[in-house]
Amino acid sequence: MEKVIFLAFVLYTLMLFVITYFTARKANNQSFFSGNKRSPWFVVAYGMIGASLSGVTFMSVPGWVDARAFSYMLTVFGYFIGYMVVALVLMPTYYKLNLTSIYKYLETRFGFFSHKTGSFFFILSRTLGASLRMFIVISVLQNFVFGEWGIPFELTVSMFLLLILLFTFKGGIKTIVWTDTLQTTFMLAALVMCFIMVGKAMNLNIGGLVSTIWESDYNHFIYTDPSSRLCWWKQILGGMFITISMTGLDQEMMQKNLSCKNIKSAKKNMISFAGILIFVNFLFLLLGAALYIYASKNGIEAKGDALFPTIAIFHLSPIAGVVFIIGLISALYPSADGALTSLTTAFSIDFLNLEHRKDFSEKKKEKVRHLIHLSFALLFVGVILFYNYHQNKHLIDILFQVASITYGPLLGLFAFGLLTKLKPNDKFVPLICILAPSICFILNLYSNKWFGYSFDFELLLLNGLLTFIGLLSISKKN
Image (cartoon, rainbow, N blue to C red; front, side):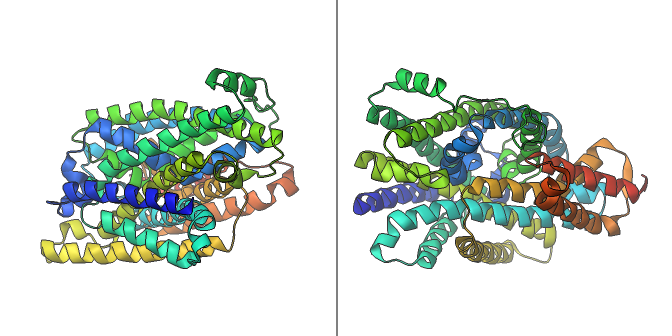
């Protein structure tokens, strides 16, 4: 079984390098940063599905069904509203200013320190988030494949980062736009095939399996208790602002959109992607319910992130195990390739101004970019090893909590810039952007004890609001 899985991994990786060869042959710095503004919108839209879902969604959303039933769909509807805001408000601003790094907007609107602060919080959030997404996938592959061969976890992590580094090193965003399409295809195929296989294992066709799920206790969407994390309005509001922050204010996701030739194409990409994502997330929830029903009938005690791999590898057919691993690997690569590229872009442009350095030749710019790219890959290795010693039942919970803390200042900064004409004292912006998430971090830990209230996704909204109020307190008319 392990040999079959390893062979599938090798073949899949070779396919990625074939795509890399053709897309990176004539790549330059502009290809790396912006794809030369030639990415087809429909290719970007399709590839973004894999990039936005990642390995955390692939495993944690099905495993989440026992704790949340189908209430996560309200968050997904919130996502859709957020994508419309990104498409109709944020992207036109970025295209109008012809930005490569979206955080240059903050320099144009507020000044030097605001620009650096925004980029710093992106780098912090994306490093922690992408490393977490990678960790969950690599840990499964380690437990079920590489660990069986005596390969240490540290070596497995280093091997994956090296592979990702190699196929993004030259082509950057120009390569990623196309490799993401392959990865999305395999991930979605694995999702559908696993759903069918679970039904087959219970002697049910697709219709029968859906009916069984619909009649189960998992078919529950709306919770009305305002003190609960699952309250419906928290889910919708949280989903909306998570999307605005983690897509519209995120260099990785916007870099792909900004590689389209014009704003019209970029809007088509975002709106199409948003619609497809509703259906895909619902299918993940159906799969989660099916897995829990199967586990209950067969006395399987696995829950949370362990549910999907345990059933696919140990309790279904060998084909199911291979399909699951291929889907998981397909979710792994988009978690890191776009993150490495966007982090390199943000640091190169926002902190080194590499795009406009007149004293650097193109060759020297390329060498500096390669060094930055390698440095972030090494940083990923360190963060993933840290996560390995602090594992959690539902890693998607950690992911959204990290996002709520680190993306809040970005939400507040961009909202203040777009909704007001005031200009904050630029020197004090970093202080405000540290205070707001610090307050939210403390509230998240103690709010239930102090007030009998549990935060969920709406913590991000509060974080952005505190940042907004803080900026208001240090502002004058522009």
